[in-house]
Length: 171
Image (cartoon, rainbow, N blue to C red; front, side):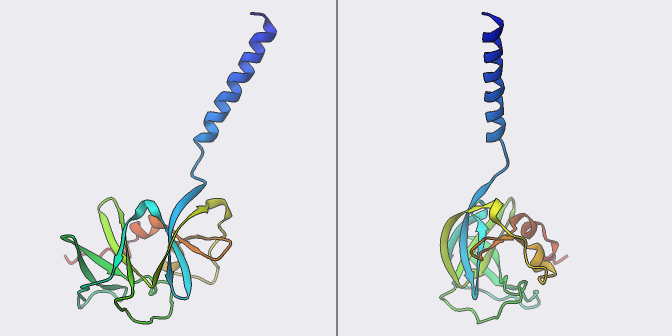
């Protein structure tokens, strides 16, 4: 093998190594579950969504923060049900049997999010997200990862699951 052939092989090896690094790049898109909190459309990364179900047999708990609507038995597990409209200052329209429940889970934490409607699933390109509006402040702003070009608000699951205001300790 002559020097020219070795250079060609080394160049090819560098190209192949470069391709492997490209594949290991961070997530550029994600599959999201879209839902309505009327009048706005929101999305939650599907890796955190364990199921979607009808809201039924909700039990209210006196003395809990306003965003906790109650608890519900889901196949033997008692989960908290929260209303994100409180955090985003959206108009409240009351809860009915038409509301859907988005059950989300990360590690040991699991709760339900009340939605007005489940839209479906879609792929969201992370690079197309714009920042939340500067007018949004407080906890709600921390819960938003970005906004898609069509106006869907992608929620930041890691911030939601790590927010201490969602954890109620009765000790």
